[in-house]
Length: 294
Image 1 (cartoon, one colour):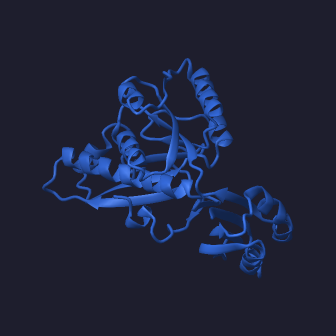
Image 2 (spheres, rainbow, N blue to C red):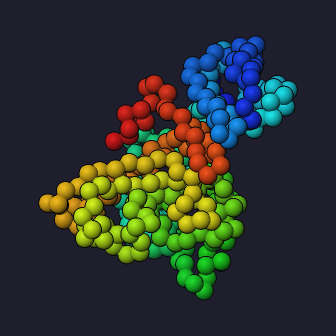
């Protein structure tokens, strides 16, 4: 049996869940997991349904047959084959902890994605990437060539048919044009001290202020730097007895885990944009993400 997922966003209304369940039953499908959220404030409804096709229904046929239901409720919907891995590009600069963590999770099968390329503005991680049989692209970025560099990045995106870009500590600001073109398809990670400790050495700044919590935030990239819709966050406690080096080490661990969980949620279509926020449905029972990925 094929395992599929249906994602739905639409204005809230009575009868949506019944219509979806009835449609799937009529087409020989059995629901295995379902999550929904009716947002009273925004007036929007979000739903994700996992199901098996027990009578050989295919995605194209289901999407076409679903058109009347979609039209009735004004839905933005999509059917997905859960066996198909999302094509992902990872971008990194000179901090490699998130890249190395993602490569490890990918290698052991804990992060089911297809890494089609790694892009960097430096050469430090070429060897480790090539050793994983993944294409590596070094695209230097300067104030003078920023537009050309970004055009080259988009060429790689188009050539690889990448569906998601992950900024694994890529320390360059993307243009408004690229953010708009890839809206909802670029995920970033950064420490959660912002906006308090900007610029260089944020962990040392935090240490000097006696911060007691170290955190990380993963979010979708928008034109507003580091202010896109948040997908995942976490924290670690620190004490007065720890050093700036301890802060950095703990911060790297938190960043790596938070980014991996955000990617996991996105590739399984559990994240829905809801204005400036997101709706993130929990992983289904049995998923390793339910164990907080780390």
